Structures are given as structure tokens and as C-alpha cells.
Image 1 (cartoon, helix red, strand yellow):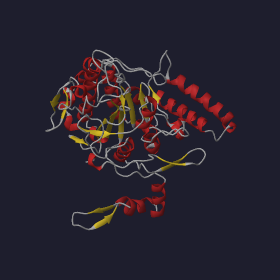
Image 2: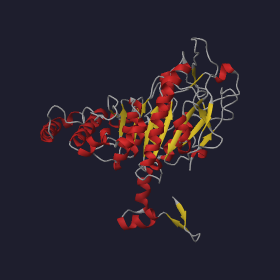
Image 3: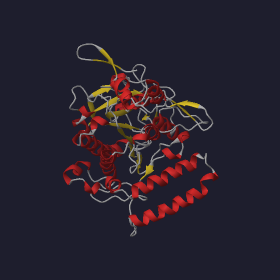
Image 4: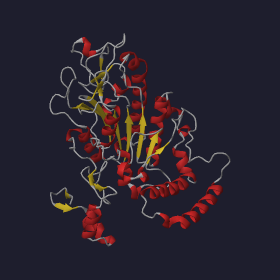
Length: 437
């Protein structure tokens, strides 16, 4: 039970358990049962989250963990630049992020052993090392489940722009994301299939169809009352109706409603527009948003691809996202998590004139910002060639435990599969206290 200390040094019990519980007729035993069932969330700075997947695996040495003193076959051609945080340097092609480095933390020396794209992706999207016998739920599914009671009915709790590597796993399809299916274009209304009233369809038409569906549902309800799939589909049908008839829901996806002054820093690329949409969704009440920036699998022409496209795109979109959240007053309550599935080999290969870097899970970076995360710092360290952590390092499970902690979710909580098998949210992980406020 949470204990607090008043200004005169006298300890008191949390007012919720001692005072409000009694006033509402909720006994202490009842409160504890709810807490044990996960219905009472601990106070947490993070109320929502944005997860950015850098698919392909970005090079740590060419982004946030440069080694200018390493031999040329390791350090590459990029130079470090100073940031607005004394003593912290990033790649020269990330100038916008360098100017807002006080808003986020870089985690160096993250390490694992899964060098295949699909396995590494599953690991960093769930926080649990993949097992052939079980599909763990991704972050978004867990957040959707844990916040279920408080989520507005006319907004999806979990949105993927345009889709996501995160799956609901054994939690079932009811916690799957709403995939937008496309990325928005700057300055244009964004149409999401299943939400917009297209082709002359009216709210009255939707209500008529909903009554028919209710009649059919009543007729066939007993066919398979215990089916997890049907439960999920029933939830989707109810939510689709709520969203299609809600002006707020349609407005949440319409980035053209943002002022040109606010939208301009996000740039003209689809990734920037996706970042703009993510800020708008979180502001509207969506709990979890994923978006992706692919192309980081730079086995060949690593430096040209990074310099000409990938780094400027990431720099513009992510810096605008962080600054935009801060401008809207949302950064302190929104946790931002940016990662690829692994890093790249420290030693440059010779497969192209420009050189390339291959898969390398033994050393990588992750970026975290917002609710509960102390910005303006680098936590962890890699060795002099960025080949491995300098020290114990961190696992994706450690980062997952920390991420959940910022959202008030206990990563050691047990769920049960459909067969009754108990599974903890994160199988192996510890909270990285240095990251926290």
C-alpha cells in the first residue's frame, strides 16, 4: 500500500484507500481485490504512448553513438556535432534533434543476440524474447488492455500508422490495433477506411445497419459464446459504430485541421505527417500509437542512404513530434519510444563503393522521451568501437520494464492464456532507474 509523508513529517495512508474508499462504500478488502486484478493503476506520469519502429535496424555508430576516435573502418565518414545538452554529441545529420536533446534520453549499450529481422522485431516490440510456442502481446495490446475501463468508446485505444509489427498475441484479437492502412499527406484530410462516411453514407444509414446487426447478433449469440475471436469481432463492431457516428473520432484523424504554423516543422514527408497525426491522436485521447520509418537495412551504400534520406527524414519528423507534444502540453504525459530491431556492424563492409553495415544485435541504441523519462541525458555506454556494452548493458526486456513503469503498468503482472497458462507481461527485465525523473 502506498505511504506518503506530509509536510510536517507524519506518514499517512493514500487518501484513496483511507478516505475516498470509505466515502464510496468500497472496503479496503474490495480495493485490494481490484488492485490485485489490475483495476487500480499506480500514479504514473505517462497516460499515453507513441512507439516509433525504425525497421531494418539503424546504425548506432552513425546516429547517436559515434566513435570519432575509432579507426576509419569503424567510425565511418560522419562527424559528431554538439547538442543543447553539454557533453552530448550526435551525428552531424541530426541537427534538429541536437537542438532539442534536452527533451529525450538516449540509451546506449542495449544488447541482445537475435540477428534475424523477424525475431529481433518481435523482441523489441514485446520486451520478451520470442518463443516458438507462444506469441507475446505487443506493447500496444497490453496498454489497450490495462486502460480498457477508462478508454473513450468512440476512439480506438491502439492505432497503427499505417500498420504495426505489434500483435495482440495470446490476449486475443480484441486488443489488436486499428490499422490506418495508409499514411497521411501534409495539409490534406486523412481518410481512414471504416471511420469516414464515404460514398454519401449518412449517420442515419449507419444506425439502420447497426439495428440489423443487433438483430442478427441476438439470433446467433448462442452459437459460440466462449469464442475469443467472436468476442473481439463483437468489440470491433461496437467500436466501429461508435467511431463512425462520432464527429470527435473523425476529427482526430484529420491533420488538415492543424494550423499551418504548427504543421510546418513536420515537413512534407509521409513520416513527418504520420508524426503530426500521432500528436493529434494522443491529444484526442488515443492511448497508444505506432508508426514506422523503414529502410534502415543498409548492407550497401550505408552512408549515402543515411545522409540523403533516412537521417534528414527522422530528424525532421521526430524533432517536430517532440517539440509539438511539448507545445501542446502533452510531452509530460506521453511516453515516446524509438527503436529498431538491432544495430549495425561496427566494422564497415566492402559490398559497395560507399560501404555498408550488417545486422548487429550485440550493441544498439534506443531513444525514450516524455512521461516519467528524464530528458537531456545519455544512459549506458558502449566500448571504444561500439562493439558491445561497456559494462553490463541493457536488454530489450529492461527497456520494456521501464517503459511499462512510466505508464503505471507492472511488468511482472501475470496474464493467462486461453489454456490457463500464466505468463508475465515481461518475462525478464528490470526497471532502469537512471532513465526516470
